[in-house]
Length: 155
Image 1: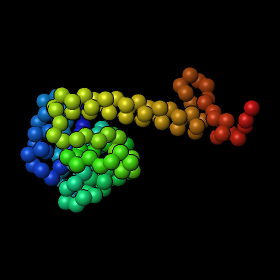
Image 2 (image 1 turned 180 degrees about the vertical axis):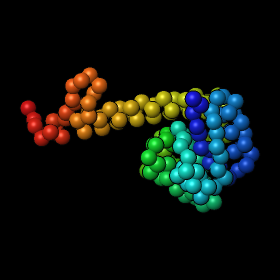
Image 3 (image 1 turned 90 degrees about the vertical axis):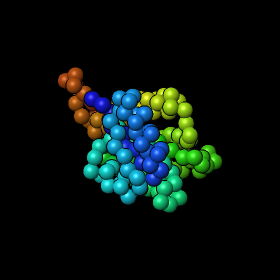
Image 4 (image 1 turned 90 degrees about the horizontal axis):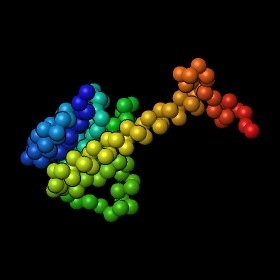
């Protein structure tokens, strides 16, 4: 199964170039040229990753896309693409998993995307296992997993 990426940028040349690079490297890519279009696609589709430009129709348009992706029930990895990286403290508040600075070497971009997808999927698996254990869901071994906190018991 190909991994799906939503690529968001208002600069057509960047959008089409990155789309071609990602597709050549085995990704299925949908594009959006604005935050509004991206938010609509996030609601109606499902993606493994959302990569968005930070500044599009407004200085905060990319943050709107990040917030929409964070609210999506399928929890995609999120990367922010920018030519104007902010200070580290500002980036921490923006909730993107990764900040990619353009222009970027194609090979570096692919390595960062692959690493982010692997890390993000690992985190999702851990969260899912934790949620199942906390809820007392069967572990598949015939035994029921229970959490001390959930059951109200402590040792």
